[in-house]
Length: 395
Image 1 (cartoon, rainbow, N blue to C red):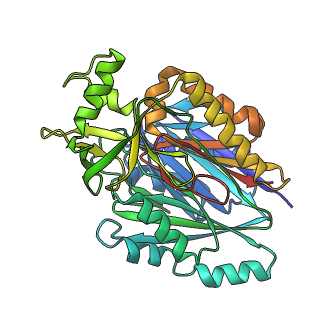
Image 2 (cartoon, rainbow, N blue to C red; image 1 turned 90 degrees about the vertical axis):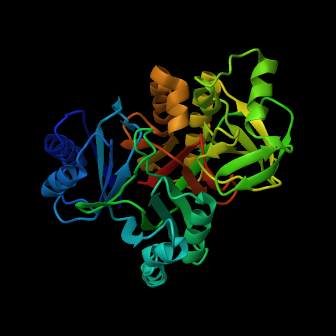
């Protein structure tokens, strides 16, 4: 019994050519036979109406899932504006795909629809010896309320599955993100892959950032906008931090400064969950990538290349340990756009760190997200920003 995967990658500018080339490479490296599921992560440079049918023409009528991105990578390539495809075939994992629309206005009904068949599928899988359940989530990256989405998926699975995944991106345009299902693409939607496995899928989570200033309290916030910190306009917290650090902080550079000096939100475990600031408003509020509640204890975080690369390695090691003695068959990585921005050309070091842990020859696919999802025992759970989340499919 085994899990096999093939990975393809293309920088072709033509969406049809890129999809065809990446899909052909994925099937060739799969080593023969029809895949059970195909994962596709692609830049918004591409016309998905042409890209996805081109891929399906090669892979055939097997389930295809994926989303728009802010960067793509595999074990062999690191790109931007490209297409990455992974074809998976396994006799130790069963994949079932669910889909829901209206995520922004009707989050609960969208996730409920995506998991409508989960209970019956889970019972059948357990009877057949597939006793471990994992929900792999791909969601609209601009839907907001990320923590609620994770909780809704967990509840929809009867709290019987670990949850992993990411929020679709759009190359930092923040205009529209899409999820993929077969040869169609949708905004305001969610795709959930229920993976039932004989042994656990290993999940690891780590960000590598550290507090860089005293704790503060969020005193006014609405959804994903922080209006006040410590009773003053939220932006003043960054102005004070930059002044104390003797770093420039102007209207021209402040958004870029904040995205590389993110907020850490203190959790009940004593760890910091990262929240990414996207932009400041004229009133001095800060628009965040995900919600931060009133009363939250926050601090501005700081990282370094070495700490981010080390965190990626530790996330992979945690995922490997959570395989419960199994061997890696294939790897999915959900990584934040903020880490790509911070590392720049050194981002390839992070990909190398993943590979150093799971094995140089293990097929790997990943992409830059607008939010990372990980809910699994013993690790920081929920919705994350600027975090590496690694999922290893058992061999």
